[in-house]
Image: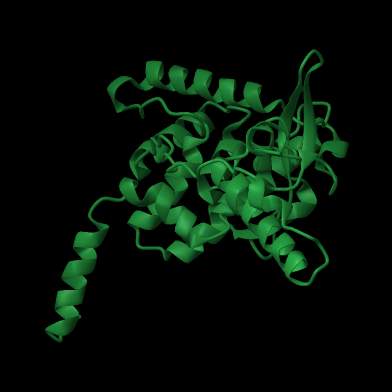
Length: 283
């Protein structure tokens, strides 16, 4: 029986349950691996035949690169300075998104115990997302990261200091908001912020920034583009792809290059010039 379309629609079982699995995931991770296991069972006479031989997995369509609109370094600096000067309550969260490359749901699920102040490091262990059930609305659910793995992300001294200051500010509101198990960026009651409302506030504040600053303001982007900005700026600066991939939480550096190769034009030209210089003996 062909279960490909059903798996594409309903096969996801993590905190993003309800979103689709890609055809490639169903074809490779489910069909190919299961088919290999059943083929081995049939070869050892544990099964009369391989039932997966008659399955029709979905075609692995060419992945479409996501639309990316990263800021330049001056544009990011301009927005964060504007947010700090006006005391925007989400300013530290926006900084963490931009300076770590973490996903929105990962940042909104951070707890104070995830911050190693002395080591200047964040541990990204979980993510919060919306699960929509037909007829029952949406529910906020905390689960693992998209890769299913934890990762450590080193912080620059200024972002580390900003988080220390934010914890003091939270303690000033209520000491319970600064406990080790409290959410870094929870709502005033200490519960998870609604991810979509968080994104809307970013868009609203960026629009206000553009009204305040006029031509010097950065262009409109989505909050997720802060992650893209982090990756693009690091790659342009020559940070190794493996390091960028680890910070983003990608499963392999290949994914990082597939997503961001077109955002860093000139990398091949620079590599060609460096190679020629090495051959001439002038690195």
